[in-house]
Image 1 (cartoon, rainbow, N blue to C red):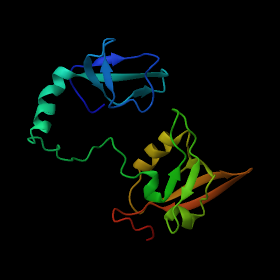
Image 2 (cartoon, rainbow, N blue to C red; image 1 turned 30 degrees about the vertical axis):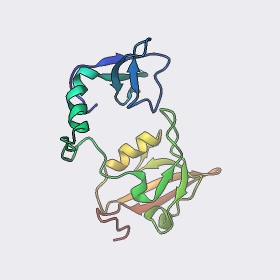
Image 3 (tube, rainbow, N blue to C red; image 1 turned 60 degrees about the horizontal axis):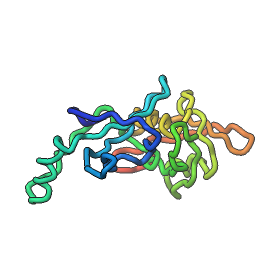
Length: 177
């Protein structure tokens, strides 16, 4: 998680996907903190949220309300993927559970995925001989690629496994080289 500082660890029945940014309150409604993003660990199958205490947020909130706050400068994060599925012209089914399969919902016309023959309702099974176990795994794999790389994709379409090839787009979004 990007935040470093005091937190409340939240692990309860009410902890659910999309809770990030929500309020953490006491039973009587007193605001205690704001939820950060959920933290997942597939090896131990644990899932917790953390809440940043209001005491840590108070000065930032006051600066925002007074118009004194500027957004932090964007710096490249080595842990963030360089590419996402949309960069390839793919829209995947919504990632609603931890292991949502990498099913293609839509393919952008003219994209590298479209030109390679990927179609809606394809299941992406392998990328460069690496098993794709979920949407999240696909995003991680795509994030390690470099512009211009030729990638080998295997999709399951109905009852067939189809090998396909496509190029990683460059930073300007060009699909072909």
